[in-house]
Amino acid sequence: MIAAPLAASLGGNAPLTASGATPNFANLPTGTVFPLNQSNLMSDPMERTVTGFTYASGATLTFLGNKQVSGVNVGTFEFKFANDDITLTGDGSAATIANSGNTQIGLTTSNLNYTLLATWVIPTNNGLNVTDLGMGVGGFQTPASGVPTSGTATYLGNGGVTGTVVTAVGTTTVNGDATVTVNFGAGSFTGALTNMNVATAAGPAPWNGVNLSGSLSGATLSGSTAATSAPSGGVLTFGTAATGTFNGALYGPGGQELGAVWSLHDTAGGGSSALGLIGATKQ
Image (cartoon, rainbow, N blue to C red):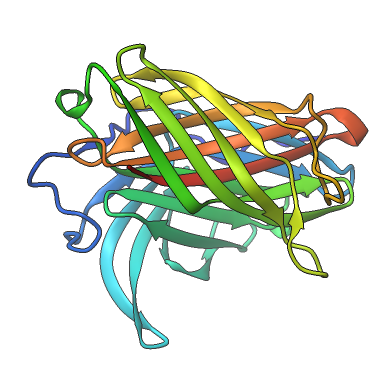
């Protein structure tokens, strides 16, 4: 049995819009609120089943300033999840949700110049007997006036793909590279996730490549994903019938960056899912 998702707010959070004077993450004002375009993946460890939930908006991160963690400045954010206000740091520290059975939630964040990527995990001991994994992207979104109306642009994320793979035999992380080509005149995009590897006890192992395609509306991107052939000797790989979703946007005054959440679902063999993030820069 898959419980209802914990995220509740489905609207009302408009993205921040970039301008020529927009601050970036090297000079971020305290109190800046970032709505997140997010997806959640919930897994039942008893039944080994997974399902994905996608939201246009919901969670938000509010920048509270930097703190020293092991001698390094780390951004501190207030994470608003459903009706809970939780202060978490970008170093992956945990905090308690008071009205969720004293469950602890962990948050990690990373960023480009204008794009914010976040991952949070609510573990199985939340009283629902499920693990809730959430990922979201936000930042200073490109205004309509900053999106070209013709031509193409390619966005590269070498090492810019991260994610989690959940199968009947285990859960692990996945990472790789992204290439996304946006056709501004046609209002479309195509791309691929390549050099994908999953973490295993014996070290990195090859995983599926993933094709991307979809449409561009203003600065927002939406479309689908599809697994390519499984690599020889791959571990926890998906079948070629696996598909999923892609949701993101262009960030920066002139569309300098691309951030997105991607998913992939394989219904064969009891069901497997992957959920991940993309951060890429315009070439």
